[in-house]
Length: 60
Length: 358
Image (cartoon, each protein chain N blue to C red):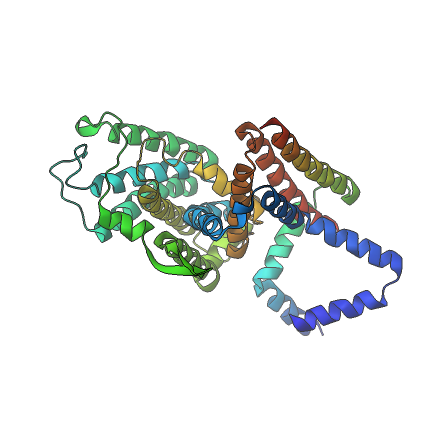
């Protein structure tokens, strides 16, 4: 059983996609903000972009 | 793919309404950048229907592919947890070298009147060597002295800029733009061998589109199908672990930076003919757009993460936004703010996908 697990682990280690996911999970594991806070930030940025485009249209 | 989609829809069917709403929310926020892009495209088209004209689409593709080599080069440096600030200046230097070697003999303001028009392969090899040397210096100081690439490439940026300013002054040129390029050179880069048939017309696809695509395919091959690529990701993920595993970290770092330098040389060669009039300011801030495209495309500054498909997507996404903002005649100052916000949104969405898993 352990051997099988080890083989599975090795196969997953050699998968570049799995390596990328692991690297990113490690990267973002130190982030302390919640998903909800991040969602609010993303939405604010999107609204800001839309507003800036509209303001840019008015100012041109 | 079809199997995965069928499995996904099966899972959705078994969900209750609350879970479905949650899933829809996730889907919307994870793809918000693409939706924003879609809305921007539709809005720009409504305001100015020339935006989606075939000529405009070819223009977007051309400008994006012209920037692919520099983005692929910088992405390698970012995968190694570094960056490259010298890229834009190397593009400028190699663009001016290409122009000086390929000015028409009949042009009155020729920089080196006694120099004949050089064969194009010689010029390509020259720019690859010049870019490669700068890249090698970046890689050497980063790997040998363990200096941060930010500092090393900042130093080489200044050195290359100084060299470029001196180069455009030689032989009485006094900083004048290097123009009057040979027709053979212009045809080689901006000419066309293929056209896009559209509404009874043939819209030419510039040759440099193919050069950009070839560079991206070459980089993809290097990254995914060679030992060098695997070593690069290993060093980027954890250089100490890679070293213990037998990866030559020193050589890999030097090779990645040298390759990046050669890529900037390719961009310089293309830009030289594309712009047609090269000055010391050619290539200014190119590295920032390339870094932004890489970040949007999911290349992480923590290293060991990045895909060529993501870089291509990032380059195209950024270019579509630049062109759309120009079509909408948005004030240039506002454009910088919008670009900055888009980079922040891209990073936040990327981070969110992994925070949700925690």
